[in-house]
Length: 153
Image 1: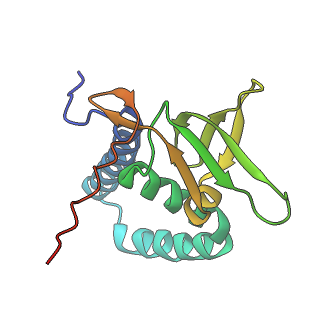
Image 2: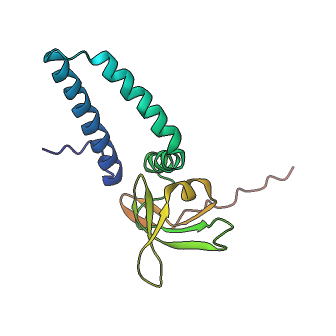
Image 3: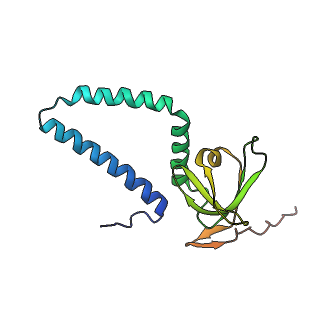
């Protein structure tokens, strides 16, 4: 059964996965408690292990959180043309049509074809140039307001 509370499929996928992991974790702990297993030491061990793993995998966690923020904030959407200033080591600009925004990668389709996978942290921390806006699911060029009249006194 699917609800259409969230229109964007990337956001829906992120929320769905996070919710299912949380629900299964709570059900497992509840079942263990019902069976008579003392869950306090288990929860403490999981907390310490999570802290240690999180500290060891700092770059991966940073990339994941950057992806979550991209999915939530949506500075660009599927179908828009995106230019990302690449890190100095790669020496250039990465550009293409946005195919997908995920917690780990932003997928672009360059004009030359193929698929470019850019880690979310690079997209989140780099200067971006987004071409075209989306109104009601369709691409539309951004509206530029007319210049305001200058009052003469």
